[in-house]
Structures are given as structure tokens and as C-alpha cells.
Amino acid sequence: MTAILTVHGAARTVTGSCYLIETNDHKFLVDCGMFQGAKTLKALNYGPFPFDPREIDFMLLTHAHIDHSGLIPKLAKQGFTGPIYATRGTIDLAGCMLPDSGHIQEVEVEELNRRNARRGRERVTPIYNAEDAEECLKLFKPVKYDVWVRPVEGVRARFWNAGHILGSASIEIELDTDAPSARQLRLLFSGDIGPNAQTFHPAPDSPENIDYLICESTYGGRTRPKLTHDDRLDILATEVTEAFKDHGALVIPAFAVERTQELLADIVELVDTGRIPRVPIFLDSPLAIRATQVFLDHAEELENGGAFSKAMATPLLRTTETAAESMQIERVEGNHIIIAASGMCDAGRIRHHLKNHLWRQNSTVMLVGFQAKGTLGRILADGAKAVRIQGEEVKVRARVRQVDIYSGHADGDGLVNWVEARMPVKRAILLVHGEEEGMEAMHKRLIDLGLDGERMIEPALDDAFDLVAEAPGPHARPGPRRLQPEIVGRADWHNDLSRLWLDIEEELDHAADDRARGVILRKLRHALDATGH
Image (cartoon, rainbow, N blue to C red; front, side, top):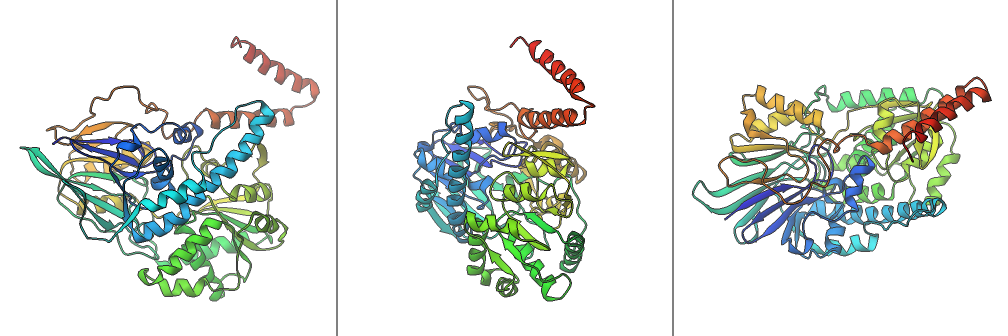
């Protein structure tokens, strides 16, 4: 039996996790995530799948984050009808996240089409809508940790707690083959590996002695200080106190699942112990509100679940379901905290709050999660003095802080320790779900650990691997790649254009007089004319 693995996402970038496994008799996926980041990368979400969804027999889903699950409604809409195996926690969160994703696409495409109509451009159709997302939820089939399932003859799978978010899993897969060198292949997909000191979850776990390890490398190049719960509270208390000095607001772009719940629990603990003032805490994300209820429903399964349930009962917490309620927050004066999605600032209500607060010197924006290249969050983290949000220029006068104490991903040391505990890996390690710097750093760390560098592969988008061959490597594929490797995981021309607009406007603002402005514009016109268009 043949066994071909094709990496259709999270290849030299952090998002779009999607892996196709083909045998003589079956085709199945591990994850089907949405690409996030630069517009060139996000455009892949609108294009055709690099496989026929009707031919996929089943799917194994590591967890509910949109970069792992976000294209499932599109997959089902285009003909996939097989079961999707996932833990109960993942299924419950997907029941919130996928319809919310569909709704966001409907709203944002409607706004885009209004702008396109004014510009004389063609209408855009959403990738899927909320109804499509609701429909695909019927395909989910719950599994338990550490229990083998057999989706089809010749394939077995077992889910292990990855310690990343509620329900997250690493997935062990056994494939029966007829190859003399490998009667049975054992694969392990890491999914996203959580740090050892999570608020709600135990340390991640998985089997050892496997043939292929497909491992995330998001923070492969970063080492975080080892923080206790009290250390984290100290850092958060300092940040909040500093943010409140000038009677301003603290705006936190937060991922709706896990980060939001951890933040809320810590903020309420600081309030209850008198370390920060009692101020209104606005949770302005319908998805985060629903996800918080899922966490409350699963509180008995969580470490510190009882304390979390108690914290969520605070009278300071104000949830805003509707857009009208969200807009009312703008009228609040004095110290208050706003937590809104998305965590990378590229969608959802957070953009409205950033437009309202980035220009205010007494406001603080605190980034608490990973910011992919090309996203507004990454641009802010890199120190931009002005940004464009929904076509409008906004000066950045607020304090922008990046506080890496709530990451759901293990750092480089944690990842290396996790890989070492999986040894031996007999065939190859594929480093995925990371930008180039993180993967290269992870590669070096593993070599320093004593692993064979020839057995570590950094796949490019749409690379395929013959898992049965003696020497695994890229397998010949007909047709071009969807994107060339040098484009993936980088800022693109859309980011360059936004930066250019801002630079032009700044030069014109600072020009001595109208004559000087005319000189600038004539030079720009001359440059455009020189292109021949």
C-alpha cells in the first residue's frame, strides 16, 4: 500500500493547517484550517482546494482554532460528507467558532462590496456563511483521549491531550502497508503544543517511538522566562496599573478561545485581591462570550475550573452581544478594560476599538498573543507610527505593549523537550506551523540535541512526501504550486502599499508649502509614467 502525505497548509507559515494522506484505498485530512496574515496568503481561502473534497473519506481535527478548522464549512459545501473525528471540547468550541466565522465573513464581505461598488470593482462572495457552518457541524463525531478509533480499514487514530486549548489534541495515526520495510507506519501530528504552565490544562502528552513526526514550530526560536501563576499576575498588575495612570482605557486584542478566559480569570483575581481598581471589564466579542460559556460547561474537566466559574460571576464583567452595545463602549470615560477579538487585529470588533483608541495618548493597547506577519497586530507590534484600518489612516499615539505571558504555544525549549520525549523518530521530522525564523531555530535546536539534520524537513506549501519510500523527500506533483515558497509567510504588496500611502501622506503633511507638495506629487507622477501605464 502506498502512503503519500501532502502538506497543504501551515508550511513556512503559522496558519492554514491542512494535511492530506492518501493510501491505495482512502484519502483523509488532518485539519482543514483557514489562512490568516497577508492578503496574498488569505486569498488562498477563496481559491479551489488542491484536492477534490468529494474524494475525502474522513477528517481528524486537532482542535477548534480557525487556522486549523476554519475551512471545514467550505469543504462540506463543496461535497465532503465524511465524519470529522474530534474531542467533545473541540466539537463544542467549533459549534461556536465556525458559525461566528461565517457571520464575520458575511459582514466583512458586505462592507467590502459597498467599497468595491464605489470603486467600480466586482462583487466578492463570502467563502461560506453562518448557515453553511451550522450545516457542517452535523459531520462531527466525538472521540475520547487515549482511545483508538478505526475510521476505515487499515487506518487507526488515537487522540492525546496537547494542553493547548480546551479539547486540543495531538493525533497518533497507524497506517497498514504492504511494504517490506514498513508493514505499519506510525505518524504523530503534534497539533499545537501548549506550555507546561497552563491555567486550565495539564502538561501535553503523546506517544514515543514513531516513524514520522509532523511538529509545530511556532515559537521554535523563542525562549520565555519560566513564570509561575504569581509571576504572571505581577506582570499583568504592572501593565494594568501603568495603563490606568492617565485615566485611560486598556484595549486588549485577544483570541476568543482560551486567551480571553485566562485573561478574565487573572484580571478578576487582581481586582478581588485589591491589586488593581474595580473598573468595568467589557467582553466585546459574541464568540468569546459563547466560548466562555463552553468553558463554564466544561469547568469540571479544567484545572482551576471552580475558581474560573467563580471569577466569571463578577458584577464588573459586562458582555456586549450586539453591534449597538459594542458602539456604546465608545462613550465610556475613565479607566476601563476592553477585551475584543480578533487577537491579530485583522477582523471583528477590535478594529473599531483600535480606530477609537490608537490616536489617544492616554490609551494602551496590550497584545497578548502571536501576531502573524502581515497582520495589523504585527504591524503595531513592530512599532508603526500610523496604520490604515478599513481604508482610514489612524495615527498611533497610544502605548502599544506586547506581553508574552498568555501564549498557548510552548516556547522553543518546551517544543524541544516535547520532541525529545517522543524519541525515537525513526524516519523523519517535518517542521510545520511556523514562520521561517521559528522553523530554522527549531531545526538548529534539534540538531544541538543530537538529531540527524538530514531527517528534518521544512516542507513548502503543497509539498508531497512518499512515506513508504526508503528516503522521504518531495514527491513529484503535476501542476504549479498555489504560492511560491518565497511568498508564503511574509508581508506582501498590500502591506507595502499601505505603508507607501502612509509615507506619502506624512511627506505631504510635513512639506514646507504647497509648492513643495507639488514637487513631491510631480515626482510620484513621473515614476508612474515611467512604468508605461
